[in-house]
Image (cartoon, rainbow, N blue to C red; front, top):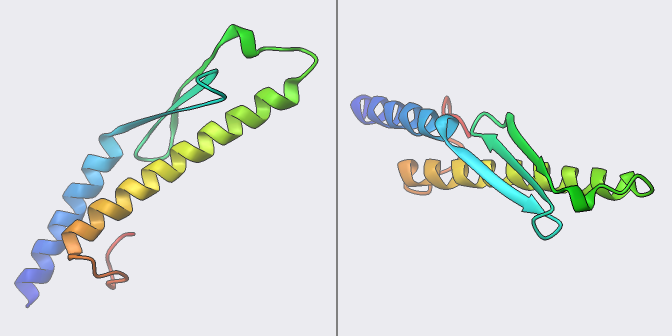
Length: 99
């Protein structure tokens, strides 16, 4: 039983490392704003199409950036949850395990 727990913990660490090294790209506003974040939830790239830049409507651009970043974070969290569920066979909330 202890050996199985150690193996699962090692697999968790491996999956977590893989997720942290991954990149997740999301766009908002029909591709007008594109963000890329890594598995550590750090923003690594931000692309803004020139046609979305309207000095009279900065609020819209801010909303699109927030939507894209929030969606990217959700994407990382969903991927992490899915991958961790594979390791645990769907069991959640194991003590000492991330996610």
